[in-house]
Length: 210
Ligand code: ATP
Image (cartoon, rainbow, N blue to C red; front, side, top):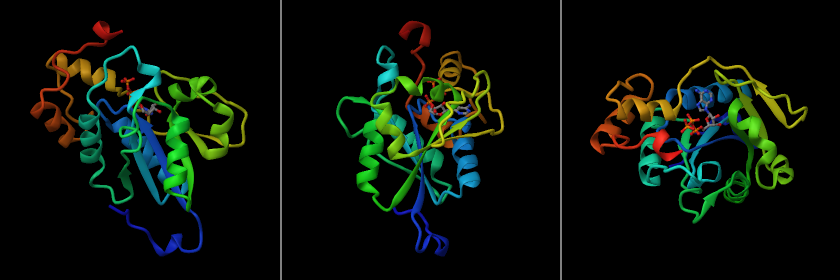
């Protein structure tokens, strides 16, 4: 579905945020990051892109992509500026951000891309595939995340933004479900219900999968 656009966008490039993640499950840390960057950078839309098999997590078991996609749809449904893309989960093989951005550039030639990333991911960015090409495809916005330093990469195409600190991680949410502890208010209500309905995370543990 097309996102709502406004007369503000007429005559200028659409400013499109890209929030990539495993979203296993999506939580309020992801949603606040996207919302804060959208407000600060005047984004018209933020597209959430659940990964296929993430290259950084190849040794870990990740939930089936359709579950992660559906939870992302449920979590973002109430925000008219948030959309979800299947571009990574429909591409066979391991997901690299360079492919995500190349594909989105092709699909949305009218858009200027702002790739949103937490401090932990930004710390790793220099090791990402084809990093030299990455800078030309999008502007990068690194957001603060509890427990991680925001690195200053000294590049003009990377902005840093302080956001409200939410010490939430998908790993902790999965472990809580496994341990029969609540995830209410850490993830959107619909995501709690999706997890319960499909009995996700009851048997997995990161200790087992590490
Ligand atoms: P996991 O615990 O399984 O590694 P995660 O909670 O880090 O997952 P991802 O889906 O890997 O979630 O993260 C997607 C993006 O969102 C990354 O750029 C990550 O840095 C960012 N992010 C995740 N949680 C937060 C948070 N609480 N605050 C700010 N950014 C976050």
